[in-house]
Image (cartoon, rainbow, N blue to C red; front, top):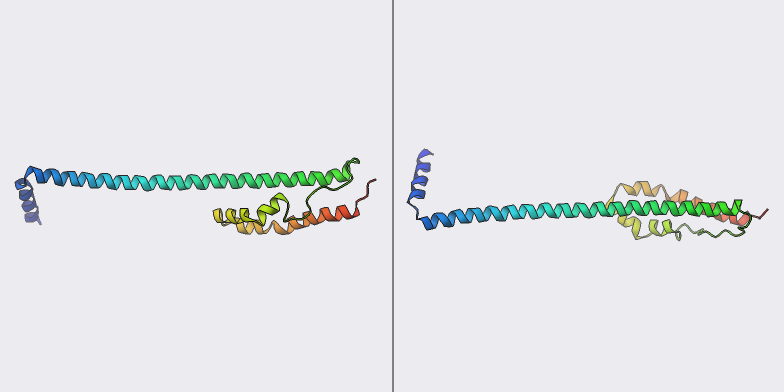
Length: 147
């Protein structure tokens, strides 16, 4: 092994300066290209992570919006029961046509589950209470009489 090293050192010392420059330049170029490739992959990962964070933030914002829309929906039902000036129930009674229902039964939910697969089991639990909520408005509307 030691002889090999001595042989290589002698070859290097005997090599022309032009060959030494080419070899050194080639190695430096190779490492610069390798570093650029690694940096590019890192930047690409950061960009993908940023997109995921933005989509997650949008999803959270959408869910908060639908929650507040249903709170407003409940407030409208409550007005029928408490405000003597309100005589008709003006809320969407079809659970698939309200704002949340359009998202829940449409592409919005599919995209949310692609982004966060664990949401699927949580969102499944919403269907029955959401349906019951809208059915209760139908029942209230059928039996309601202004005092």
